[in-house]
Amino acid sequence: MKLVKPKKCAVCGDDFLPSKTTQKVCGLNCAISLGKSNVTKQNQKAWNKEKKIRKEKLKTHKDYLSDFQKVFNEFIRERDKGEPCVSCGCKVVGNGHASHMFSVGSSPSLRFNEDNVWRSCVECNLHKHGNIAEYSIRLRDKIGEERFNSLIVNRNTPLKLSVGEIKQLIIEYRKKIKSLKYA
Image (cartoon, rainbow, N blue to C red; front, side, top):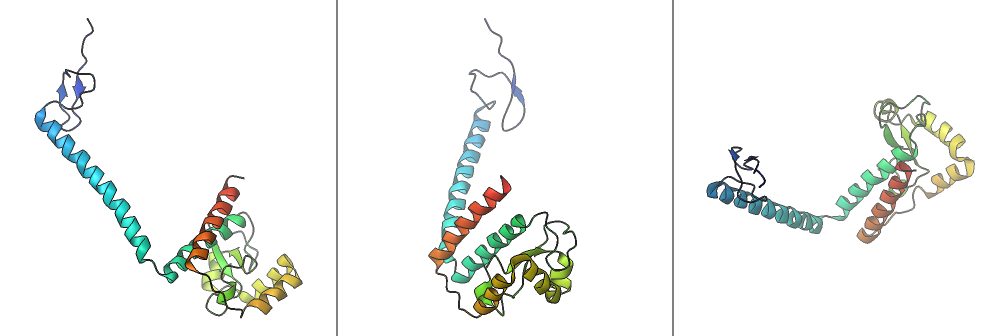
């Protein structure tokens, strides 16, 4: 005959001798408490799922653009990892910033153009407002005169993305990030 080892109650923590191998609690009161906590956890899980669906329905076009901007900037930082700052050439400490040559406010059509956005140090992007004079010189060298001129020509072209297109771009860029991280 096998001896039954004492267990700790999952609710109160007291030691007890289980009558069944699957028994988790010491008595009826603890069993009721465990059952209630499991129901509470299930209800919380269901509510979190419902809340996520409701939040998604309330999102505006601007919210989707903001979500895409975060994913796009993460892609830029991952793409340019290990590269020096595009503006000053120094080593970028930490993640750095996704710096736009032509700002989102003045040229919204280039907001998500990979030739317009490069990783830069915090000093250049925040404190020197992009350090645009140096940025333009280094960017020409980096992408070539033809692609740089294309940016200038296309900077006033309107960019109109539907919510569906934005969602698709978010998925595409997440895949790109994943492939860069695990390559």
